[in-house]
Length: 227
Length: 107
Picture (tube, rainbow over the protein chains, first blue to last red):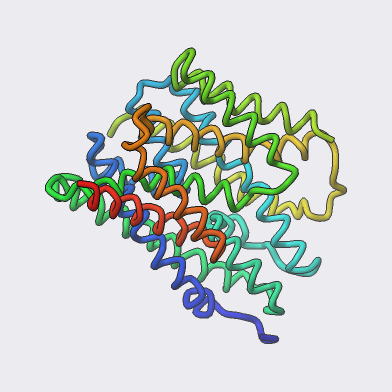
């Protein structure tokens, strides 16, 4: 495509993401109500955080009584990888690409939106902020709609369906594993191995909160020490 | 609304906005790379996700190996689905469906 892609093109390109996001957001909404949060609280997490794995983890941390600062830092550390999305995308877009409205559309740069946008650029499509708006809007709307449906229907509906409840309950480990696979590289293997082992040891010896903090720090330090 | 939830959500959301918007708006792709800060940024994400995956999967595992069937099937399905088509969403959904189906089959 050599013409400037429009908002509508971005919206159409978001359809595969829309279909994938809705059920994951739905399961998040169900999980939130199962853990005792109100529909408004579950929806607020999706509206304000808009990052699947972080939101599931927020539910776990908030219900486990973890200190507020540890909860916030854990969620922030999870999404630190997003700082690499914008520069990677703009490098592909070219030096003359506009970022005038990036303070709005870049909010929608989730893992899937980033991959979709980067894929389009690598196939020769021109960069346009309108396209990014369309792509991000479809995905965000789907995420919010899925959450709203999940919180309104709630977890009670699945009490008589243990297989469905188990599948919904496995959504967080599955999402984290898929994210891990997406950022896996030979260089990061020692970081991942150290973080996983220290978390395991720390959790067994001193509990989950200590294990999580120790695992993250050990992994990050391993990354700094490697040249 | 729960004040602690709102505080955590606002802090995490603000950080997310900054991580996604500022490097894009400031065109940090034009800056020279390298250094310990870049290694720290590159390592923190994988470290956090590996940590949280370990923490999330641990409560599902038991010493009775036969009871771990649904978790093993779910994990293997995520890996296989991602290897076939590298999509986070599809691999997540495939893993959850396989896990739920195994729970249903084993009763």
